[in-house]
Amino acid sequence: MDAEEIEAGRARWQARFDRAAKRDSEFRTLSGLDVAPVYGPQGDDPRFERIGWPGEYPFTRGLHPTGYRGKAWTIRQFAGFGNARQTNERYKMILGAGGGGLSVAFDMPTLMGRDSDDPRSLGEVGHCGVAIDSALDMDLLFDGIPLGDITTSMTISGPAVPIFCMYVVAAERQGAPVGRLNGTLQTDIFKEYIAQKEWLFAPEPHLRLIGDLMEFCARDIPAYKPLSVSGYHIREAGATAAQELAFTLADGFGYVELGLSRGLDVDVFAPGLSFFFDAHIDFFEEIAKFRAARRIWARWLRDVYGAKTDKAQWLRFHTQTAGVSLTAQQPYNNVVRTAIEALAAVLGGTNSLHTNALDEVLALPSEKAAEIALRTQQVIMEETEVVNVADPLGGSWYVEALTDRIEAEAEAIFAKVRDMGSDGSMTSGILRGIEDGWFMSEIAEAAFDYQRKLEKGEKRIVGVNCHTASIDEPLEILRISHEVEREQNRVLAERRAARDGQAVERALATMVGVARGEGNLIPSMLDAVRAEATLGEICDALRDVWGVYTEPARF
Image (cartoon, rainbow, N blue to C red):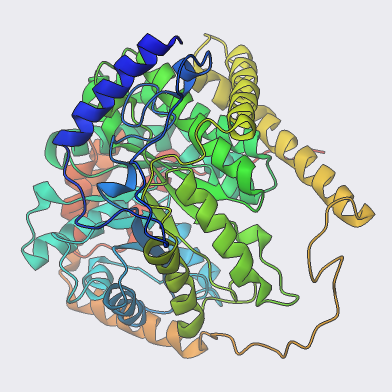
């Protein structure tokens, strides 16, 4: 790009920056030096067409011309344990300490669409997140937290749609304006088959539910994001940075194809798609990954799927620091790891961020560890001045070369996925890759390669295979009492006895009738939730219609 084109772009950026709202703050270094909102080349730069200015296609440098001068990222700490009331207390602590949004962690029975008193739930209730059996639990979870004002992310995929219905009903009962709810539901079933393994049905019924949810939100709750396409769990399973990026964006393209197959306007529904990435320990690689992600998504949405508006081309993403990088050995080192990973996410332009607690490798976070994790973000936001300049590493020879390299690797993977399909679509290739175990084998190979390097000492982890001497004492960790499960089951039994059982049966029967046809399931599922049908009852009714999915054995 020649100097004249670059200067024309700078003028466009400046005009947008001047019109945009900015935070009331001074933007100087610690020593008092003024800094510009963004920096770019002086003169010609042949790379700059791929780099660009913040807020301008291809959005490599961020979605907004102001960067974090307009709005800093949302501090959204992931939390959930025990029962709804215990988790509600933790949420109030997070919000009171400066958190800007909530992120719900569910226990394993909830993630699998089972009630707490299901025999398969024994010993798991409340242990890796909060137990939610019905809308009354959702009422308790957000008691005293106005859902009309707080954005909430919910990390759940298999039974995401009934959980969403419980959230909507809880908002109704608060008197919140449901049509203006804002938040994010994960709902990403592709990554479950690829990495996390928490599904209910075969892929096609899940895609039916996701399509129904996309239609419902686009029409009735337009600010709500019905899909958060997750690379986090793919990376935690052992994928490389390029694999995480490529598999995640491929899944996102599959959901775009789903929306188009429903006759939805890509410029209407694409802004409702968001993403969830891992921030791992390789500082510059992670920054390059986030920058490449925005650029790839914008190009594909515009050139392949026909999106015309900026908002439809934007890749919005939440980031969580890498749980898999935490170590049980010398656990206080995890504070350092988390801070480095969080800084990479910020310099990569994340829209919201969760920082892991130092003890999460051992148990659910204690209150003290959760506070340190929250303060980690606040130190970065308030003290380091990294919020002053948009994409401060833009133009770095190293970062730009890494961004290009990761983008090229991702594009090669996209081509492989499409070639696996029967019709050239990304969806067909994803489904074939799931069926053949291709994604799992690619991740397993990457994980094996990394583990081999660790054992040979080619990769080093402080406290694990180097610098192992320590004066650490054992941590006091949060333990969930078995009384939580007993109490949850007692309350559930009381609720079943107190509700109108015939109303529940009628609502479930209506929902099943819709499931056997082609109508949108969300309204009938909302009615079942309002009647206090439980999560397990709703999911079991749909299992009776659609069956269950068992992953084929592979050797």
